[in-house]
Every structure is written in structure tokens, then in C-alpha cells.
Image (tube, rainbow, N blue to C red):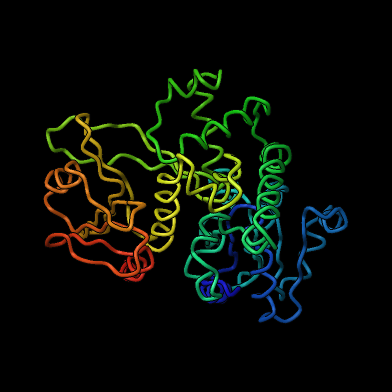
Length: 383
């Protein structure tokens, strides 16, 4: 499948000495990089999980120095954090666009060396698993994308059973190999149990004390675990909307798994029929649709709104002076609650969209419409 980020990445490499492509493991970074580097003559590709490639960098200056006129791709560079100061030195010796393309399975926060060593020399881009827009071009059904998630090997599996098995293996590898490679100390049995518990909390407000008690860890440890999952691009922590309305607001964040397929794997949901009859179906749809929206409206600030009395808005998007409220309903005839209308009134009457699995939308009141997910994504293209 063609990736939306391909054109942007090519342009980045003509403007910045170092470009870092961030994203979870197995989301397609290597495939995209190999596609892009065909534009560059004699590009060099090193997979730092391969011992033979890693040995070439036993003296990185000696190996990389003579390659100053070529693009060098360093895959899984987070495994060799000592390389970052060397790259800074090499870039400063001969500064030109397109010297290094770094493929990174961790966020900038987990790789502080990049921000410290390569400040002013690096441009960051995030690659997610396949988006709805990307799979739609290939005529893959939205329901399949929702069930299996966007990781290429999972989405394109021969059947649902194979897809689920791939996601289970992915999660096992993340727990047993990737987490230790980040240099972060966790107690794996506890962390594995914690991860499974978070699947049941998908789309819910985090009660740190209750979560810590249920997982048999301290509150600081629970926050540390969530932070690690967030920085590994696996979960999204949605903050509460900050506004001074003289109302008592809920101030705890909500938690979402960024890939719906991983939630389903953790909950042992194999087929669409299983999902439709599972109690998580509503929150799964909410998280799936929300992630697609936030991938499109990248510049918007995202939050949710809830008062202590129960008035709640699923998603509040703000960008400059613009504000859009989004509600998620897994129904072909969605009926907003009384609390939804009250929430809009609290926020001064912003535009609102109710995202539902419908083919065509319709107006509810002035400024409020029922829309399909693809329809809202098209509308948000200008954000």
C-alpha cells in the first residue's frame, strides 16, 4: 500500500541533514524507508538488529565518515543510543540535506539523546500503522481495519485467526524484548498483567489509585507503566479539557489503545461477530474513530470534557480559534444524550459532529450533525 507520508519524507530529506521516522515496531517504517531511498544514489541501509550490520559500527566514525556524500539509513537506532553524538559530529563536519534517515521504534522522550545531541539538525516524522484513508484506497473494508488494526502483517493476514496470532506475537515480543531494550526497568510479570488490565479500561477515565491497587503496584509505578506504553506509541492518554467555567470538572485523563487490533488481541476477540457481541464494542469504536481523527487533525489540541455531575463530551478539538466537539455512537440512528447538549452549552455552543457507522449524515440542530467517519476525516483535512 502507498503511504501518505512518503511524499513528505522525500521532501524532508531534501531539506534536513537528519530525518527521524518514529513509530511502533512493525508499522511499516522499514518498507517506507526502502521505497524512499530509491531516489538517492548509492544509499546505505544498516539494520542495527542484525549483528553483521552492527559490527560495521564498532568504530562509527571510521565507517560513516567516508559516506558523507550518501544517504545512510539506520534502522532501530534506539538500540545504539551512543551513536547520536557521533552523528552530530559528522553532520557538523559536512552539513548537507539527506545525510541520515533514522528509523526509531520509540518516542523522542524515550530517546533524549536525539533532542540533546541533534538539536537544530533533525526533523521528526511519525508513521502510524495503516490509516483508514490508506486502506480505503486499496478497497480494504473499514470493518476489517477496525477489527484487525492497521499493522500491515495483521491487516493483510490471510484470515482472522492468523491476524490475531500475529498481534499476540507482537505483544509478546514487545513485553519480552522491546521493553528491556529501552533501558527501562519493569517487572515483566506485573507489567504483562498491567497491560491486559488496560485493555479492559480502554476509553475510560483513569483512576490511578484503583488501577494501582488492582495491578498490585504503587501509583507511581502505574503512571510509569502508562508513560512507557504511551512513549512506545501503543496507548494514547487523552487529557481533560481545561476551561474555567465555574464548574467542578473531572481532572483525570482517559486512556485509549492507539491500535484497535491490539485491544481486541488482549481481549481475545478474533472475529467481527465476536466484537459485535462484546461489551467493549462501543469503546472500541470510539477509540478506533478517535485515533483516525487525531491522525488527520494533527495540529489540533485534543481533550475530553466531563463535569462531576456527569456531563461529558467524548472529544474536544481546538486549533487556534476553532473548536469542534466530536461524539462517538456505535448506532445507525444515534441519539445524543441530554448531557451532550448541556456540554455544548457549557462550552459556548461550538460546532459538533456525532460520528456513527452511517453512509450519509444528517443535521440534528444548527451546528450539530451526524456524520460518517470518512466524512468527518474529509472535513478535517483543512485542520
